[in-house]
Length: 499
Image (cartoon, rainbow, N blue to C red; front, side, top):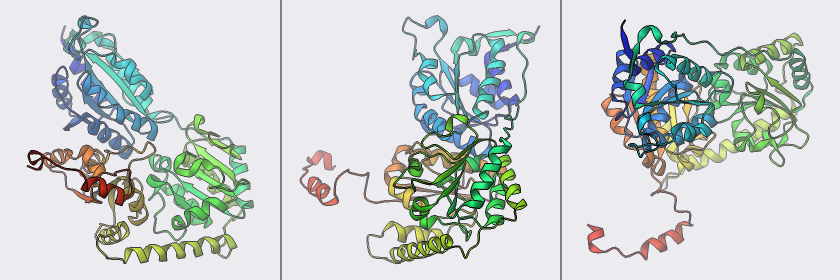
């Protein structure tokens, strides 16, 4: 009978599950595993830091809708991924982290990089496990991949001791290699759809909020149909931008505060009422606002405020049914409505304010001037990766997105250091799926410092990424500029330090 080792079984199981990319750093005990993955026709991308590797893998998962893998060594190698694991889990992006670990017969006696890895990873994952035998590896790989996609997407971790990786068994004893299964399609309760349609048609000041969940759900065609057919005003969360083009005349992003504060019916499409949307509470929202919430995850419904109607559903299905109900009533929200007039006036006022700041070319340049000029040179359809406090926040208002999944940033967890990893994943995605699309990475100088060495990875793989670093003179000091200047000027450096 033919024998097979653990490395080969893992690689075959991953390939059978549709995993096409693995990002990581190899060393003991996963060197042979990385080779087996490449022999199974999985693209391996060698990174400079495990944290950036995990960021890249999850961004690939978001862009493709299926998880990529992150491969790391034992102990410190795995611990370096935890920022990425938490970021993926909170952003609801699919990723599978695979870690090598100390041989099982070295556990408890001070083995090299011995660490209780499964239990340490568990708080940041939907699923964390160590397959106990080589024959059971395909079952665990299938489960891990499935759980990254099903329900609320997120992270999974699989732990492989060195003796499992190098061990050999008869091939006939290995459990079957199953192919991937699509996530189950969740349909809404018809009565909830009816209630949502009633609320929208009765609203005096309606507002649609498009979240990154709509982008991940590939719901852009349906959401655009909703906006175009009803003339409802909308705004987007940062990574919801582009599901409906920022250039749409129905976009009221410049009047965001007014829209949130005065809307009487808010339709949430794949957006969560967390800190990004001020929790849906007064004074940022009207105390009488009625929320229509559509989310894939039942746990997310009614989280911060009680929704007038909370719909657990695949977003595309729910929006299609709402659109059908509105069209059946011949509903269109008139541009002559006073609410539209209020929003348009506020948009115009805020645009004039921004235009004045963007026209100010005094030195040092302000962010609005920088981003206004940068945007004039961006390709119409490019992926914009952005991070850094001011760089990301102001850039979001100045660098527009007209296509879905064309903006990647620090996200719900506010994680800095994601930019280069995200850009690497985006460039590889474009190479294989949209070869004419470019990737622009706009970094604050502080944020760039977290993962800046990944430039070497970009060069090594010949990835055509343009990086723009917005330099506001160093990492944020936490002080008023004058106070920091006085502190800096009072510091004396020895000659050796100056050298």
